[in-house]
Image 1: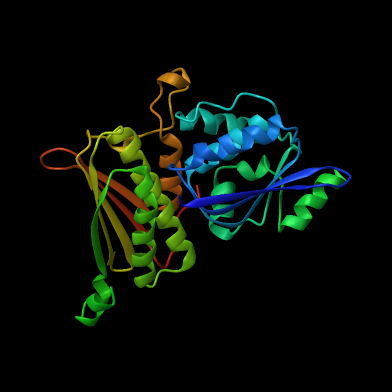
Image 2: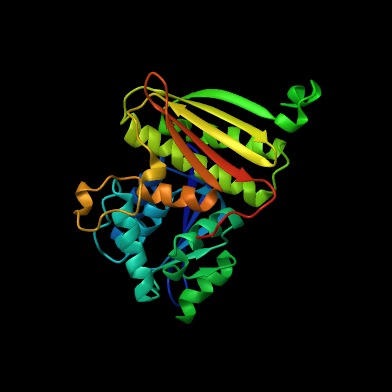
Length: 142
Length: 154
């Protein structure tokens, strides 16, 4: 598998679940990522930091999984992953509404991944931070 | 790769490989593009764009062209002038992604053709995309990205 995930729960004023992605997120593994997040939400996780420091590639399928993860963490149904455009439009709609959500944040994005996130407008939807520590701190400050 | 340069074709760097139409092989597709573009002397942003565009193209061929049936993709990457050119050839039913417009919003999402988000990213990451039918059936898609200019952002 081209991607590994590790999960850590950081206790503090606000408990933060940190999921670190390592490798490449593409059409072969993006559904598994959403499946990995569902039990975290079911177990009570309400603040998720996705640490993308070691993620070297993300495809449009990966963007759908990021958006689906947000929906899961908001207690909603994720969009049908088979229909990329409807997911994209839902993302754009949410991004335009500018409702900066505080449930899922991104940390440590490298240039190729950051480019894709900004090209699709997802940077308006997901607050992002240079590294894991500042991402965790942002939850506490919110 | 080094051998090809050694035999005296440094300005026409060329790599060809046939890869099974399997999502599990996308990493291999990306690796071939990354290695070839690097060998062509392309800068990091150009390499990243090409890897992105070819991954999206191959994903669409596998998911919506072959639809889970066995198949192959012939991948050719080469330097033509100052352009890194990647050609994907398949024998899936004919589909021209360059003709795909933004989806018709009057059509319910479940009836729209999927895969459009990848095409959107392919457009942003390349300087040109050309599709032609493959003689005998299938598709030939050519993606081009200058190694010296930045591509269009919108």
